[in-house]
Length: 172
Image (cartoon, rainbow, N blue to C red):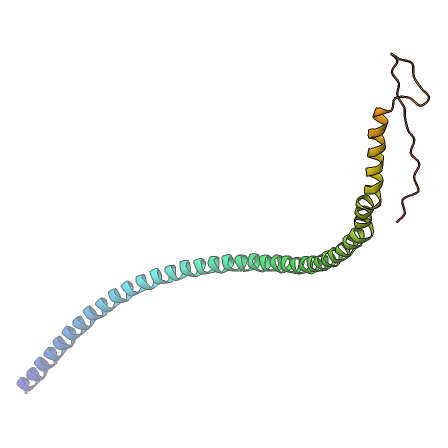
């Protein structure tokens, strides 16, 4: 019986030794797992820091974008006001061009009337009635140059005669 007990004891020690060896292997694996977990925790911490930095940059970028959008909206409003002013100015310009066109027509009509009633009548008068009177006046002037006295003049003396012309009024 003793041998049986000894065998049983020996089996128990072997089993215990195997369990201790397995426990040692498990502890070693657990240590490796903890080291891996520590490494992963470092990477996780670095990733979290990077994420935080990226989030801060994203926030700054969003603020810059918001400021730019506000400036763009202000510029668009200014542009809209400018376009409205340009439209009003264009309407005023078109009205002015219409008035200019109308005035040019009135000026043309007035110039035709001035030519017909003024210039042509003066031209006809000067070349018509006055032309014959002018020819007669020139003839009298030429004759008066040869005529040096009205009632006689002594020899050696010089004289001059002036004539006054009276004409009928020039009619239209």
